[in-house]
Length: 285
Picture 1 (cartoon, rainbow, N blue to C red):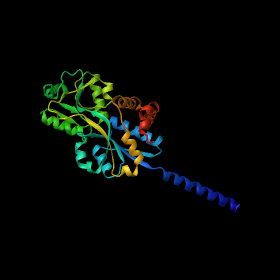
Picture 2: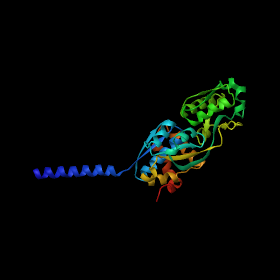
Picture 3: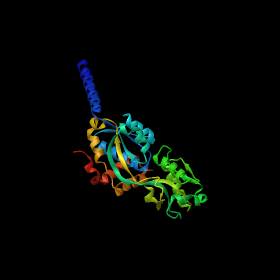
Picture 4: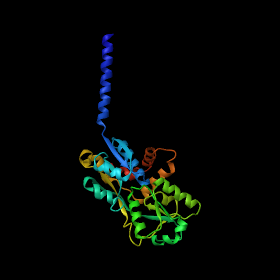
């Protein structure tokens, strides 16, 4: 009987040790993302592909842009797929760029600026003051740390606008935009593409004759120092990670459509199952 108990104990210990060693063999990848529609969609697609197709354990953490750039530069996060360069995140790049690896862009020519519903009878930022009352003297923005918010502060000064910039968030901005459109009201918001609001509503960018918002950014994937050496396979995946406007718009549309019923990883996994032809070449051989 004692021998049987001893054998059982040895077997249990061996199983536990094997399980622990197995967990140790699974490498972790830490992704940071900002609560922007395209960033959430791209991040969680990357998460499920790196886990399901490459066998890593992925942790995703949301943060404000400044926090995310700090986290990547200091090595607390491995990758960030939503760096808008050269303009939107210029101030963060000036501060942290020497300590961050740029893995190239995953989306080309992403414009930013001020956006209105297409029924609004103006076409340029320099016309806003003429319709201050119709707009309520307010531009609806997103998080105060976002680069587009800094650019909009500059636009208010450059165009001498009698407007205040409202700090909200991407979801709140979209909700206010939708409410205004439903009631045929005038509204001006900070806007960028890619974004699902352009699929949901008929919108237009206001012309920017002073070129405050600059040329369209590209969206880059960035990594912490040493990620290319510590996680070479994942780094290669992100170097291959790329979307056309149609592909990213389709992915973001799924997040918008199913967001109330499914969690982010489930939505991304469902999209991945239906679009293997898009991402199969991203996976290193």
